[in-house]
Image 1 (cartoon, rainbow, N blue to C red):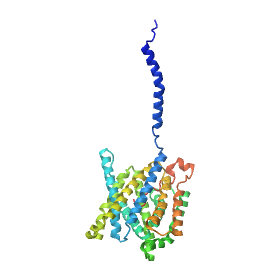
Image 2 (cartoon, one colour):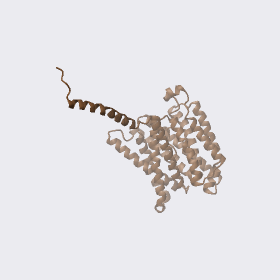
Image 3 (cartoon, one colour):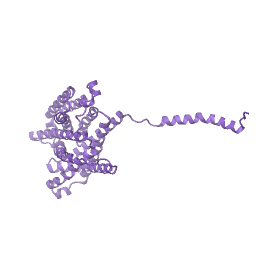
Image 4 (cartoon, helix red, strand yellow):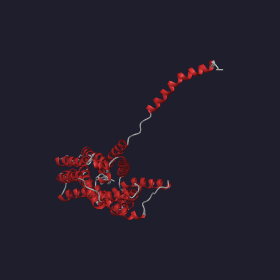
Length: 366
């Protein structure tokens, strides 16, 4: 016999019917309010932009303390800048070790990394700081970037067997032309900083800027080789940055003397340390960008550094604006932008065979 629903059951049924649409509506609104996860391309672009801005801030800080161009001061600034990155690298190593992950480099990589550290610190960072004191921010960043890309491609071909595509060759030609053009504007850049610039000073500014790029390029090839063997970025950075502190700092004290080191203004120390913090942020940000984007796309974003450095040099430090500087900077940006265009369908389907792996070098101020 069929039982008739009670009054309470009927009331509950009507209540459920009224609440069900509201519940579904609330669920839909919550789902709509939940932010969508960023795409890998957006993540990579965000990391790349953070790196470009952070590197620019670092370079501005280094330019601000580039008031002397003697070797002791230059080495001292370079060693102090490495402190934040060294601390961050050792913290990451400790975290990886606590998590049971490989933390320090394998023994077979220690000597190559130590050699790379010496090259990066002296031929990269020290020369970059010297060039800032002689040629200014705009000239130095443009020269270093152009030399970095060209040397990275050539050394990558020689040491890793990486292919230099026609597009890369054209880009290299443009960047070499940029170096030549910037050379003609180096005298005006030096005069705006030193007030008196001899031919030797101008030549040293250009050689130091280009030498820094070559030093970064060579270091980048070795670092990339280590990363291809499964090493982490923190394992490579801990050796390189530690060398900047424990190798350069004693040398700076010897060259400057204890009394002169004690007399360094606290404001300049704070400026260098702040630049070092942004340098560490930039390094790990660009590593994140490489995780989500092809290297050519990261190069495209990094080209903004050249323009930002030129603007910062003019507005913050009253560096000279010359047709040579404008043309050379434009050629540098153009050469980097060219690397951002896809070469062919075959290269896109086979990234390992393309030229998208040759420029994972440190940016200036690393």
